[in-house]
Amino acid sequence: MPLFDKKNFNGEVFGAYVDRVENLNRNELLKSGAVVEKKEYASMLPDQVGGNYITIPIKARIGGEADNYDGNTDITADSRDTYTHGRIVVGRAHGWTEKDFSTDITGEDFMPAAQEVAEYWDDIDQATLLATLKGIFSMTGKGNEDFVKKHTYDVSENPTNNVFAETTLNNAIQQALGDNKGKFSLAVMHSQIATNMENLKLLAYMKYTDGNGIERDLTLATINGRTVLIDDNMPSESVKAKYVRAEKGTDGAKLVKDSGASGDTEINKADVTSDISDIKANEYVVQLPAGTGIHNLCNGSRSY
Image (cartoon, rainbow, N blue to C red; front, side, top):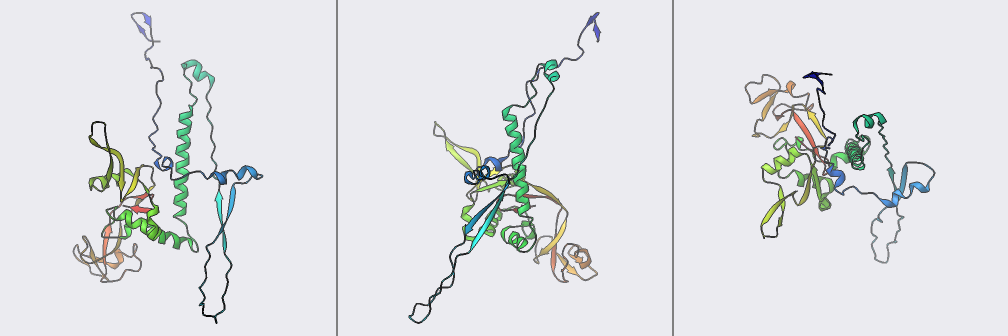
């Protein structure tokens, strides 16, 4: 041990363990209440001998062509169709262990408290939920890819407005559900998107009136009438710069030529075909810069 004035002493003194690293994950999607347990389905599992897949039969709506009721036309009848809806149970498990010596030598209990364990499983559950949603909107195969394209809105395909802007959310929810878009009541977005919306004064903050009659802003915002939850765990991906079709007059647009392009307003077709394989001469393109594509969970809209 070090000596000072002929006395042994600890050269380094540690304070007691008084805190732990804070969990910075907000897990807003999980906490929002948008995803809830269906107790009627959960109760089915213990009634069976094992298994992690539930099949629910569903009756289709009645349909068919109406017959002319004129006394001469035969009245026809149709039988109702049925479908099945599969639900799979996703399980995760983990444990923690600590040596008695760690507690004996420090006087500190290192086993996690219930709150910390709950936070850990919140992280896992939200990651599982986001992975599931990513899988849904990445479906391929007969009918699946067509469904995804018809029900998602990709702002990167709009060269005149390829960022999350004033109309993006409204367009996205209409693309997803058409005239049933009113069923959407919540938007979960990355803080970068929320900050951009805030800077454009597009977020409306809820207000309350205190006991003195003074109206104050809450930190809870809305956009297009939908409550906004901000969570940086929303999925994102790095995207390379790419060319997309554009209208003549679009800022930064270039005229495509078979060859011999000159200046900043023209580009050779060979320089564009890697991004747009069917591009033709005399069309216009604009280059979207590289950046991070952020997926906002409203219905899978992507913002750059």
